[in-house]
Image (cartoon, rainbow, N blue to C red):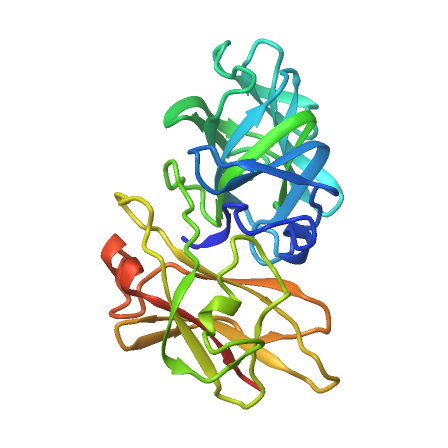
Length: 325
């Protein structure tokens, strides 16, 4: 199993939002509210879709996802499962607060949960496990850790899934989102955003002002008014980060996120890295454009031993950037 997408929505603002990360649709003029657990921020939108790829743009048969949501009304489709421009499956919340699974865009009802599960203006955590098959499909849904749909032997469509979309015609809030490429949920997840807090001995890039590199990249939300620059192949910057704000029972992954661009006409590539003890984990090499984009790399294991992350190893890790070419 691989985690293919994760987002806590903590770093976005009106200038740099999910459109720069790779969402194929993201609410225009989106706003942000305090996160569901009273820290960070969540996405707050109305009558707009939030759509993301399930597996690096490819279509897959099995998937799971989870996210926290809040809606201001009942009686509409919340999640649609896509292949290209076609809706393969969907999940609806009806006016009675039931979750209802459908094949197509609320076309053929596959099954319904009990009534009264979803109330307006209340945070819930939803997880779905889907196996796409024309006769042996599986659609399972969990709300706040409790299974509310268990549909097997279903026709869940003839085409694999390449993207997911959350949509609500009135105001909705979204937080702590993950997606995997197997039909196995992770359990309720929380994404904690840690920002650089100090320089380390590896300090090759140049700050736009002052002498503290980390202070150029420690903003609460993305800000390009100060920055670090690197030009020589192999130049690296590593930063210590603030500790986790809570002690998790499990850490499924660490994601390194960077806002970056090039400032000349030459081909420029970079990658985001993570260092645990003395062992480095390298993200994907990215070709830069002349406008800022958001790049994320997910590290599901601690590179120091290829073992599961712990709160201790996350707190001790360093995050960095490297000039590749």
